[in-house]
Length: 305
Ligand code: PMP
Image 1 (cartoon, protein in one colour):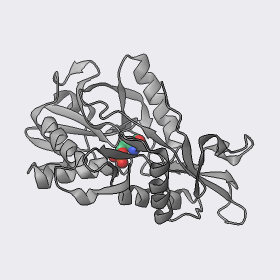
Image 2 (tube, helix red, strand yellow):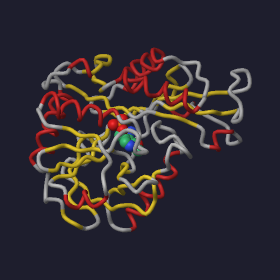
Image 3 (cartoon, protein in one colour):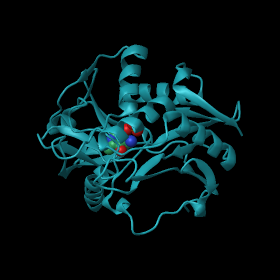
């Protein structure tokens, strides 16, 4: 059962959940909004949440706002402060998912702060310790990821999820867990909420950031871990659909799914469980998030619980 949090951060203050409101007659119906998705890892040893890559997510949020041309009165520090205050108010003692969101309530064809009304809020929800760690079944979608000529796939804009919703519903109809979308050029792009990696002959391969994909923070983190911590060769290059079928391992990465092995693509088995490279990356990533794998500067401690 979904939990309704007691509090939410709304336009600069922590308020009761039911007091964060917006009228139904709003330009927000046009879907002009950007958002972020972060994980806060609860650490029993110091009774705090440790938010992974807080600075990078807030930096991406400001970049999304700039590209979407939404004026916003809040700086990264305001969002960071809001997150700290809200974590303290909620008092969760488990892992959390944070969703800072900025939307245009009024002024869809303007960038003038005098005409535009921007609203910002941050919900925080408890989430299970891990999601898809055991593996997922994928299907290559008939929907294409739009190119940068039509919509900006690199930013985290709500409107982009219209496309991903269609792909996810189609995948569910086919009995798969996740769609893998190709770009308009027919090369592999990403899933409905994660980046795609493959392993071929010991090399780790992922599509480049210009492949109609979100500029993912986990993707970048996993490339760094693979290269610097585990010593693998990594390649960012266009990926063909049939390489997914031929690969030794396929895995997905993202804030929410962390590192998830792909068990099959279009019903073609990849392997029954995480392959050795995927498993090594999973272990390294989990240790870092739990606080005993180095890179502690990637985690920002929240208030004590
Ligand atoms: N692609 C899409 C479409 C996503 O929604 C997400 C989740 N934010 C990702 C990739 C992974 O991005 P990140 O690693 O920054 O969470």
